[in-house]
Amino acid sequence: MTNLFREQEGVYRSLHPTHSIAAYGHRALEYVSKDDTVITECVSTPCQWDGCFGSLYDEDATILMLGTPLTTVTFIHSIEERLALPGKLVKEPRLIQVIDREGKGHNVEVFGHVSGRYHSSYFFYKLEDALFETKAMYEATIGDAKSYVINTRKLYEVVAGILTKDPDILSNDKVIPPHYYEDYL
Image 1 (cartoon, rainbow, N blue to C red):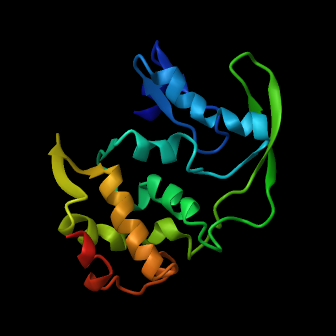
Image 2: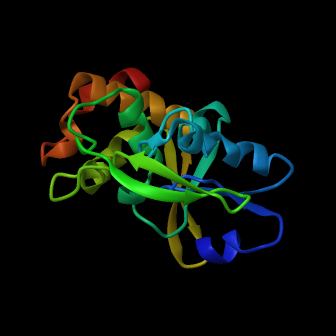
């Protein structure tokens, strides 16, 4: 569905080399241009707070996870980046060429997510109880798809609060204790 949307007339794609966003509407180009800093600064992280993902918070956006699990909520990585949690990004960047909207190539250093068994998104499922209980998220069925509707500001508040108490909680099998998020009920 994402590629079908991206290829529609009037849809703009951000220039981020690994975590691009597509947008449609009267502010679409303005919004996706938030990721243009990857060209001007020639360095990037996957979900920079001042880019498209972090700006979902500023927009008070709602995230719809259509038939996909919590482990794919990329916005949570932007929260980790804003909190500057150690061990979430690789130490050495890789060089990627980004082609701008005029067709010119730019070399960009990208610090990707640490991958493997303890990649934090593997453990995002552990946030489900906290997000439901704090009303940051509710479940909806769209067609036959079990879906999640998530408020980005409430998601930020709850996840940042949990990660402030235990920065490694999304890197292991440890259960998130309810007292980590009781302030957000």
